[in-house]
Image (cartoon, rainbow, N blue to C red; front, side, top):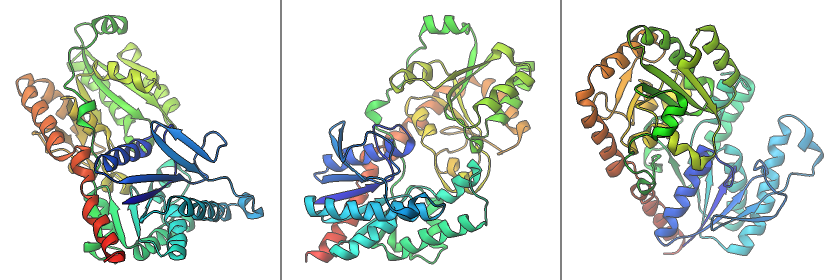
Length: 404
């Protein structure tokens, strides 16, 4: 069976979106599917029609040459037109059995148009509500015209697609609330490749010494510095924590829109060398910094985006047998069972974060059990092989409907 995946962007770019895509493609090929892949004009890379990356061939879409491609709002529909045209060319070449479009809705709109031309079934995968992310990034206002327009377009795609997949129960419930039949929606949860994440060993002693952290307990966050991640709360908790545990240090690895603000806040709080900002590091170097962290902290703020969407980073930490402390937003509660696979605190409450961390720090005897339970959860329920198998009945049903 030939599946044509329709994507916003892809590897070699690095993002949670591209890593999920790569994992899906790897496992689908392991299951015997032929996968083909096309990206919209939003993918930024070499000006080539076709690009081979890590054993996968990606068909690229050129920017639209239409006059309206330069106009706000209309430029989004130029992306749809460009992608639909390129899709038609690729379909003629690879002759897929099923189209599988992934967020955002622009991809779904292009896929719907072409699916009708070629009488192909369409699976639409919702990975997040992009209008909610735009609110956090400051490029849209909740309830505003752009927000409502994006919401409407995605609901339209939900109604027209033959099947819907999404990454978590929070998103599934929201889609059902739009009047979509529950039986049409399948959760394909975020997961990790368990073979790529072994139980972490001892931190590199030379690096520990270089950082000045010999004999210290290290809290850490590795990821993108977006406002919804709630990192200012973690910085606010540090002076309180240091007053009782002067051996604590905080490692922040990554970058993003809030990096400058966070650095300024650390200075304002007089945290000095108690907090280290490493910036972005090459993907193949990240592991050595994971190994330096004793407790990973994910203080996400409570908002629609975080209540509905499950993140990937806590799973990666749990896969390595690391301790995880996270806010009690809906996305985290789908991943973490409080005081069994990790510890939860009240979102947005610095007092709750402080109490939770101090209690965990005071109970080192329970750490091995929590680490073991977190790893077992990932091994049994959140590995990519188990997750991607959930596509099988969807594809088989759609192919069967077309080929009795």
